Length: 435
Image (tube, helix red, strand yellow):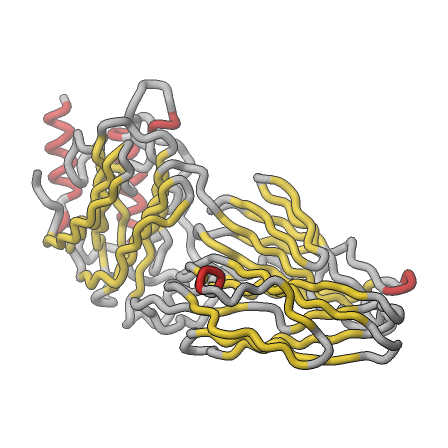
Protein backbone atom coordinates (compact mmCIF):
# COMPACT_ATOMS: atom_id res chain seq x y z
CA UNK A 1 0.00 0.00 0.00
CA UNK A 2 2.79 2.45 0.91
CA UNK A 3 4.61 1.69 -2.36
CA UNK A 4 1.43 2.41 -4.26
CA UNK A 5 0.97 5.71 -2.45
CA UNK A 6 4.60 6.63 -3.13
CA UNK A 7 4.04 6.01 -6.82
CA UNK A 8 0.95 8.19 -6.81
CA UNK A 9 2.90 10.95 -5.07
CA UNK A 10 5.75 10.79 -7.61
CA UNK A 11 3.38 10.77 -10.57
CA UNK A 12 1.10 13.52 -9.32
CA UNK A 13 3.65 15.88 -7.78
CA UNK A 14 6.84 15.61 -9.82
CA UNK A 15 8.18 19.09 -10.48
CA UNK A 16 7.76 19.15 -14.31
CA UNK A 17 4.02 18.56 -13.99
CA UNK A 18 3.70 21.53 -11.68
CA UNK A 19 5.64 24.12 -13.65
CA UNK A 20 3.43 26.81 -15.13
CA UNK A 21 0.41 25.99 -12.98
CA UNK A 22 -1.21 28.59 -10.74
CA UNK A 23 -1.66 28.64 -6.95
CA UNK A 24 -5.23 27.33 -7.25
CA UNK A 25 -3.87 23.99 -8.49
CA UNK A 26 -1.48 23.86 -5.58
CA UNK A 27 -4.26 24.62 -3.13
CA UNK A 28 -6.51 21.94 -4.65
CA UNK A 29 -3.77 19.34 -4.41
CA UNK A 30 -3.21 20.24 -0.81
CA UNK A 31 -6.80 19.44 0.07
CA UNK A 32 -6.69 16.08 -1.72
CA UNK A 33 -3.27 14.87 -0.66
CA UNK A 34 -3.50 16.10 2.93
CA UNK A 35 -6.20 13.51 3.56
CA UNK A 36 -4.03 10.74 2.10
CA UNK A 37 -0.62 11.53 3.49
CA UNK A 38 -1.09 13.79 6.53
CA UNK A 39 -3.39 11.89 8.85
CA UNK A 40 -1.79 13.79 11.77
CA UNK A 41 -1.92 17.22 10.13
CA UNK A 42 -3.50 20.05 12.11
CA UNK A 43 -5.63 22.87 10.75
CA UNK A 44 -3.14 25.52 11.87
CA UNK A 45 -1.78 26.24 8.37
CA UNK A 46 -2.60 29.73 7.18
CA UNK A 47 -2.52 31.26 3.71
CA UNK A 48 -1.40 34.79 4.55
CA UNK A 49 -1.86 37.25 1.69
CA UNK A 50 -1.61 41.03 1.44
CA UNK A 51 -4.00 42.93 -0.78
CA UNK A 52 -3.05 46.53 0.03
CA UNK A 53 -0.36 47.84 -2.34
CA UNK A 54 2.83 49.00 -0.63
CA UNK A 55 6.17 50.34 -1.78
CA UNK A 56 8.86 47.69 -1.98
CA UNK A 57 12.09 49.14 -0.68
CA UNK A 58 15.45 48.16 -2.18
CA UNK A 59 16.58 44.78 -0.96
CA UNK A 60 19.87 44.83 0.92
CA UNK A 61 21.97 41.74 1.33
CA UNK A 62 24.91 43.36 3.15
CA UNK A 63 24.15 44.18 6.77
CA UNK A 64 24.88 47.63 8.15
CA UNK A 65 24.23 49.36 11.49
CA UNK A 66 21.23 51.63 12.01
CA UNK A 67 20.88 53.99 14.97
CA UNK A 68 17.45 54.93 16.35
CA UNK A 69 16.40 57.06 19.32
CA UNK A 70 13.85 59.63 20.56
CA UNK A 71 13.48 63.02 18.93
CA UNK A 72 13.44 64.85 22.29
CA UNK A 73 13.61 64.56 26.10
CA UNK A 74 11.25 66.77 28.14
CA UNK A 75 11.85 67.96 31.73
CA UNK A 76 8.55 69.44 32.97
CA UNK A 77 6.85 70.56 36.19
CA UNK A 78 10.06 71.82 37.82
CA UNK A 79 10.18 74.39 40.60
CA UNK A 80 13.32 76.37 41.39
CA UNK A 81 15.93 73.98 42.80
CA UNK A 82 14.18 70.84 41.53
CA UNK A 83 16.03 68.34 39.32
CA UNK A 84 15.02 65.55 36.98
CA UNK A 85 16.75 62.72 35.13
CA UNK A 86 15.45 61.52 31.76
CA UNK A 87 16.77 58.59 29.75
CA UNK A 88 17.11 58.36 25.96
CA UNK A 89 17.05 54.77 24.69
CA UNK A 90 19.43 54.38 21.75
CA UNK A 91 18.99 51.17 19.74
CA UNK A 92 20.89 49.45 16.95
CA UNK A 93 18.06 48.52 14.56
CA UNK A 94 20.51 47.38 11.88
CA UNK A 95 22.15 44.08 11.00
CA UNK A 96 25.76 44.66 12.05
CA UNK A 97 27.53 46.12 15.08
CA UNK A 98 26.97 49.83 15.73
CA UNK A 99 29.86 51.92 17.06
CA UNK A 100 28.86 54.85 19.32
CA UNK A 101 31.77 57.19 18.72
CA UNK A 102 30.90 60.26 20.80
CA UNK A 103 28.05 61.86 22.79
CA UNK A 104 27.91 65.66 23.13
CA UNK A 105 25.64 67.83 25.33
CA UNK A 106 24.78 71.49 24.68
CA UNK A 107 22.95 73.70 27.18
CA UNK A 108 22.43 73.48 30.99
CA UNK A 109 22.16 69.66 30.99
CA UNK A 110 24.53 66.93 32.18
CA UNK A 111 25.17 63.49 30.70
CA UNK A 112 25.27 60.84 33.42
CA UNK A 113 26.85 57.38 33.69
CA UNK A 114 28.15 57.11 30.14
CA UNK A 115 31.41 55.19 30.09
CA UNK A 116 33.70 56.28 27.29
CA UNK A 117 35.23 52.77 27.24
CA UNK A 118 34.78 50.60 24.17
CA UNK A 119 32.60 48.09 26.03
CA UNK A 120 29.59 50.43 26.12
CA UNK A 121 30.23 52.04 22.75
CA UNK A 122 29.46 48.94 20.67
CA UNK A 123 25.87 47.77 20.19
CA UNK A 124 25.09 44.44 18.57
CA UNK A 125 21.98 44.24 16.33
CA UNK A 126 18.91 44.73 18.55
CA UNK A 127 20.92 45.97 21.55
CA UNK A 128 20.03 49.17 23.40
CA UNK A 129 21.97 51.81 25.30
CA UNK A 130 20.33 54.10 27.86
CA UNK A 131 21.77 57.64 27.99
CA UNK A 132 20.67 59.48 31.15
CA UNK A 133 20.52 63.27 31.16
CA UNK A 134 20.23 65.41 34.31
CA UNK A 135 18.70 68.90 34.59
CA UNK A 136 18.33 71.21 37.62
CA UNK A 137 16.10 74.29 37.52
CA UNK A 138 17.84 77.46 38.70
CA UNK A 139 14.82 79.68 37.95
CA UNK A 140 11.34 79.41 36.49
CA UNK A 141 12.46 80.08 32.91
CA UNK A 142 12.39 77.40 30.28
CA UNK A 143 15.64 76.02 28.91
CA UNK A 144 16.62 74.18 25.73
CA UNK A 145 19.62 72.11 24.78
CA UNK A 146 20.79 69.36 22.47
CA UNK A 147 22.30 65.91 22.86
CA UNK A 148 24.19 64.68 19.78
CA UNK A 149 25.19 61.03 19.33
CA UNK A 150 27.87 60.31 16.73
CA UNK A 151 28.06 56.78 15.33
CA UNK A 152 29.22 54.77 12.31
CA UNK A 153 25.68 54.50 10.89
CA UNK A 154 26.40 55.24 7.21
CA UNK A 155 22.93 56.70 6.62
CA UNK A 156 22.70 58.82 9.80
CA UNK A 157 26.10 59.33 11.45
CA UNK A 158 24.64 62.13 13.62
CA UNK A 159 21.53 61.62 15.79
CA UNK A 160 20.18 64.75 17.53
CA UNK A 161 17.94 64.58 20.61
CA UNK A 162 16.37 67.87 21.69
CA UNK A 163 16.44 68.72 25.41
CA UNK A 164 13.53 70.85 26.65
CA UNK A 165 12.98 72.02 30.26
CA UNK A 166 9.91 73.89 31.55
CA UNK A 167 8.61 74.94 34.95
CA UNK A 168 5.03 74.09 33.96
CA UNK A 169 3.16 71.15 32.52
CA UNK A 170 2.32 72.61 29.12
CA UNK A 171 1.11 69.42 27.52
CA UNK A 172 -0.84 66.18 28.10
CA UNK A 173 0.73 62.81 28.87
CA UNK A 174 0.42 59.89 26.44
CA UNK A 175 0.10 56.42 28.02
CA UNK A 176 -0.01 53.04 26.25
CA UNK A 177 -1.41 49.88 27.83
CA UNK A 178 -0.35 46.84 25.77
CA UNK A 179 -1.58 43.23 25.93
CA UNK A 180 -0.11 40.10 24.38
CA UNK A 181 -0.39 36.38 25.07
CA UNK A 182 2.69 36.82 27.24
CA UNK A 183 1.27 39.53 29.51
CA UNK A 184 0.66 43.25 30.00
CA UNK A 185 2.89 46.33 29.95
CA UNK A 186 2.51 50.12 30.32
CA UNK A 187 4.46 52.80 28.44
CA UNK A 188 4.47 56.06 30.44
CA UNK A 189 6.32 57.25 28.46
CA UNK A 190 8.39 54.12 27.66
CA UNK A 191 7.64 50.44 28.07
CA UNK A 192 8.44 47.01 26.66
CA UNK A 193 6.45 43.84 26.04
CA UNK A 194 7.20 40.26 25.01
CA UNK A 195 5.16 38.65 22.24
CA UNK A 196 5.24 35.71 19.86
CA UNK A 197 5.39 35.65 16.05
CA UNK A 198 1.96 35.37 14.38
CA UNK A 199 0.01 36.77 17.33
CA UNK A 200 -1.79 40.11 17.52
CA UNK A 201 -0.85 42.64 20.23
CA UNK A 202 -3.48 45.14 21.41
CA UNK A 203 -2.81 48.75 22.45
CA UNK A 204 -5.02 51.05 24.54
CA UNK A 205 -4.38 54.79 24.93
CA UNK A 206 -7.39 55.70 27.09
CA UNK A 207 -5.25 56.17 30.22
CA UNK A 208 -3.63 59.19 28.57
CA UNK A 209 -4.47 62.42 30.41
CA UNK A 210 -4.13 66.18 30.15
CA UNK A 211 -2.68 68.63 32.71
CA UNK A 212 -4.99 69.85 35.48
CA UNK A 213 -7.66 67.34 34.56
CA UNK A 214 -8.15 68.43 30.95
CA UNK A 215 -9.51 65.68 28.72
CA UNK A 216 -7.61 63.98 25.89
CA UNK A 217 -9.60 64.34 22.68
CA UNK A 218 -7.29 63.24 19.85
CA UNK A 219 -4.86 60.34 19.29
CA UNK A 220 -2.12 59.59 16.78
CA UNK A 221 -0.58 56.09 16.60
CA UNK A 222 2.63 55.35 14.66
CA UNK A 223 4.52 52.15 13.90
CA UNK A 224 8.10 53.44 13.87
CA UNK A 225 10.15 50.24 13.76
CA UNK A 226 9.68 46.68 12.48
CA UNK A 227 11.93 43.70 11.74
CA UNK A 228 13.59 43.67 8.34
CA UNK A 229 11.53 42.10 5.52
CA UNK A 230 8.12 42.83 7.01
CA UNK A 231 5.80 45.64 5.93
CA UNK A 232 2.93 45.18 8.36
CA UNK A 233 0.92 48.22 9.43
CA UNK A 234 -1.23 49.00 12.46
CA UNK A 235 -4.61 47.36 12.05
CA UNK A 236 -6.80 50.34 13.02
CA UNK A 237 -6.89 54.00 11.91
CA UNK A 238 -4.25 56.10 13.64
CA UNK A 239 -6.75 58.50 15.27
CA UNK A 240 -8.59 55.96 17.44
CA UNK A 241 -8.02 55.47 21.17
CA UNK A 242 -7.06 51.80 20.64
CA UNK A 243 -5.05 49.89 18.05
CA UNK A 244 -3.53 46.48 17.27
CA UNK A 245 -0.52 44.99 15.50
CA UNK A 246 0.03 41.58 13.89
CA UNK A 247 3.53 40.28 14.70
CA UNK A 248 4.34 38.75 11.35
CA UNK A 249 8.02 37.95 11.96
CA UNK A 250 10.34 37.44 14.90
CA UNK A 251 12.07 40.64 15.94
CA UNK A 252 11.51 44.09 17.42
CA UNK A 253 8.53 46.37 16.78
CA UNK A 254 8.09 49.89 18.20
CA UNK A 255 4.72 51.67 18.48
CA UNK A 256 4.38 55.34 19.48
CA UNK A 257 1.36 57.37 20.61
CA UNK A 258 0.85 61.16 20.73
CA UNK A 259 -2.29 62.74 22.19
CA UNK A 260 -3.94 66.18 22.20
CA UNK A 261 -6.03 67.67 25.02
CA UNK A 262 -9.17 69.81 24.74
CA UNK A 263 -7.02 72.95 24.63
CA UNK A 264 -5.29 71.74 21.48
CA UNK A 265 -2.00 70.97 23.25
CA UNK A 266 0.03 68.01 22.04
CA UNK A 267 1.84 65.59 24.38
CA UNK A 268 5.38 66.76 25.18
CA UNK A 269 6.76 63.37 24.17
CA UNK A 270 5.14 60.27 22.70
CA UNK A 271 4.50 57.12 24.66
CA UNK A 272 6.76 54.45 23.16
CA UNK A 273 6.08 50.69 23.45
CA UNK A 274 8.77 48.26 22.26
CA UNK A 275 7.44 44.79 21.43
CA UNK A 276 9.88 41.92 21.08
CA UNK A 277 8.41 38.97 19.16
CA UNK A 278 10.27 35.83 20.23
CA UNK A 279 9.34 32.28 19.23
CA UNK A 280 8.96 29.95 22.21
CA UNK A 281 10.00 26.94 20.10
CA UNK A 282 13.39 25.28 20.21
CA UNK A 283 13.76 25.66 16.42
CA UNK A 284 12.10 28.46 14.45
CA UNK A 285 12.74 28.75 10.69
CA UNK A 286 11.83 31.76 8.59
CA UNK A 287 11.86 32.15 4.80
CA UNK A 288 11.41 35.44 2.92
CA UNK A 289 12.29 36.33 -0.66
CA UNK A 290 12.51 39.22 -3.09
CA UNK A 291 11.60 39.10 -6.80
CA UNK A 292 13.01 42.17 -8.60
CA UNK A 293 10.55 41.96 -11.53
CA UNK A 294 7.44 41.73 -9.33
CA UNK A 295 6.15 45.34 -9.15
CA UNK A 296 3.74 44.61 -6.29
CA UNK A 297 4.77 41.74 -3.98
CA UNK A 298 1.62 42.13 -1.87
CA UNK A 299 -1.18 41.59 -4.37
CA UNK A 300 -2.72 38.25 -5.40
CA UNK A 301 -0.07 37.53 -8.04
CA UNK A 302 3.56 36.70 -7.38
CA UNK A 303 6.23 34.06 -6.98
CA UNK A 304 5.92 30.95 -4.84
CA UNK A 305 8.86 29.61 -2.83
CA UNK A 306 8.41 26.85 -0.23
CA UNK A 307 10.26 26.19 3.01
CA UNK A 308 11.21 22.55 3.77
CA UNK A 309 12.33 20.97 7.06
CA UNK A 310 13.71 17.42 6.82
CA UNK A 311 14.11 14.73 9.48
CA UNK A 312 17.26 12.66 8.93
CA UNK A 313 15.10 9.53 8.55
CA UNK A 314 13.48 10.85 5.38
CA UNK A 315 14.05 12.30 1.92
CA UNK A 316 13.27 15.71 0.47
CA UNK A 317 9.69 16.16 -0.77
CA UNK A 318 8.50 12.82 0.65
CA UNK A 319 6.14 12.28 3.55
CA UNK A 320 6.19 11.87 6.43
CA UNK A 321 9.70 13.17 7.16
CA UNK A 322 9.78 16.34 5.06
CA UNK A 323 7.65 19.08 6.64
CA UNK A 324 6.42 21.51 3.95
CA UNK A 325 3.20 22.80 2.39
CA UNK A 326 1.98 19.30 1.48
CA UNK A 327 2.90 17.91 4.90
CA UNK A 328 2.42 20.85 7.27
CA UNK A 329 2.19 19.01 10.61
CA UNK A 330 3.69 15.50 10.39
CA UNK A 331 3.81 13.09 13.33
CA UNK A 332 7.46 12.80 14.39
CA UNK A 333 9.07 11.76 17.66
CA UNK A 334 7.09 10.07 20.42
CA UNK A 335 3.57 9.07 19.37
CA UNK A 336 0.97 11.36 20.91
CA UNK A 337 3.44 14.09 21.89
CA UNK A 338 2.55 16.99 19.59
CA UNK A 339 5.47 19.03 20.90
CA UNK A 340 7.84 16.78 18.93
CA UNK A 341 5.98 17.45 15.66
CA UNK A 342 7.07 20.32 13.39
CA UNK A 343 4.43 22.64 11.99
CA UNK A 344 4.25 24.99 9.03
CA UNK A 345 2.39 28.11 10.17
CA UNK A 346 2.13 29.94 6.84
CA UNK A 347 2.13 28.83 3.20
CA UNK A 348 2.63 32.08 1.27
CA UNK A 349 1.87 31.59 -2.43
CA UNK A 350 1.84 35.13 -3.85
CA UNK A 351 5.20 36.71 -3.22
CA UNK A 352 7.93 37.56 -0.67
CA UNK A 353 6.70 35.42 2.29
CA UNK A 354 7.11 34.81 5.10
CA UNK A 355 6.94 31.07 5.59
CA UNK A 356 7.63 29.75 9.10
CA UNK A 357 8.28 26.24 10.44
CA UNK A 358 8.54 25.56 14.19
CA UNK A 359 9.58 22.61 16.34
CA UNK A 360 9.06 22.72 20.09
CA UNK A 361 11.03 19.63 21.19
CA UNK A 362 13.62 18.24 18.75
CA UNK A 363 14.76 14.63 19.03
CA UNK A 364 18.12 14.06 20.68
CA UNK A 365 20.78 12.63 18.38
CA UNK A 366 19.00 13.83 15.25
CA UNK A 367 20.10 15.93 12.28
CA UNK A 368 17.53 18.18 10.60
CA UNK A 369 17.81 19.66 7.11
CA UNK A 370 16.60 23.12 6.04
CA UNK A 371 15.75 23.71 2.38
CA UNK A 372 13.89 25.97 -0.08
CA UNK A 373 12.09 24.93 -3.26
CA UNK A 374 11.27 27.45 -6.01
CA UNK A 375 7.82 26.03 -6.64
CA UNK A 376 6.73 28.47 -9.37
CA UNK A 377 7.85 31.88 -10.60
CA UNK A 378 4.45 32.47 -12.29
CA UNK A 379 6.27 34.33 -15.04
CA UNK A 380 8.16 36.76 -12.79
CA UNK A 381 11.58 35.16 -13.15
CA UNK A 382 14.39 34.73 -10.60
CA UNK A 383 14.10 35.50 -6.89
CA UNK A 384 16.52 36.07 -4.00
CA UNK A 385 15.82 33.91 -0.94
CA UNK A 386 16.75 34.51 2.70
CA UNK A 387 16.47 31.91 5.48
CA UNK A 388 16.85 32.68 9.17
CA UNK A 389 17.34 30.02 11.85
CA UNK A 390 16.33 30.84 15.43
CA UNK A 391 17.30 28.57 18.35
CA UNK A 392 15.25 29.13 21.52
CA UNK A 393 14.17 32.52 20.19
CA UNK A 394 17.66 33.77 19.29
CA UNK A 395 18.68 34.36 15.67
CA UNK A 396 21.72 32.08 15.30
CA UNK A 397 22.28 32.03 11.54
CA UNK A 398 21.06 33.94 8.51
CA UNK A 399 21.61 32.76 4.93
CA UNK A 400 20.69 35.65 2.63
CA UNK A 401 20.57 36.65 -1.02
CA UNK A 402 20.47 33.19 -2.63
CA UNK A 403 19.69 33.58 -6.35
CA UNK A 404 17.08 31.01 -7.44
CA UNK A 405 15.11 30.24 -10.60
CA UNK A 406 11.94 28.24 -11.19
CA UNK A 407 12.38 24.57 -10.32
CA UNK A 408 15.55 24.89 -8.24
CA UNK A 409 16.05 23.52 -4.74
CA UNK A 410 18.42 25.10 -2.21
CA UNK A 411 19.72 22.88 0.60
CA UNK A 412 20.45 25.69 3.03
CA UNK A 413 21.81 24.08 6.19
CA UNK A 414 21.70 21.17 8.63
CA UNK A 415 20.95 21.44 12.36
CA UNK A 416 22.36 18.85 14.79
CA UNK A 417 20.48 18.29 18.05
CA UNK A 418 21.12 18.62 20.95
CA UNK A 419 24.45 20.28 20.12
CA UNK A 420 22.50 23.03 18.25
CA UNK A 421 25.31 23.13 15.71
CA UNK A 422 24.20 24.74 12.44
CA UNK A 423 26.25 23.68 9.42
CA UNK A 424 25.81 25.68 6.23
CA UNK A 425 25.37 23.37 3.20
CA UNK A 426 24.48 25.94 0.51
CA UNK A 427 23.88 23.50 -2.36
CA UNK A 428 21.53 24.36 -5.22
CA UNK A 429 20.12 21.68 -7.55
CA UNK A 430 17.46 21.60 -10.22
CA UNK A 431 14.68 19.60 -8.62
CA UNK A 432 14.85 17.83 -5.28
CA UNK A 433 18.07 16.01 -4.36
CA UNK A 434 17.97 12.24 -4.19
CA UNK A 435 19.55 10.74 -1.09
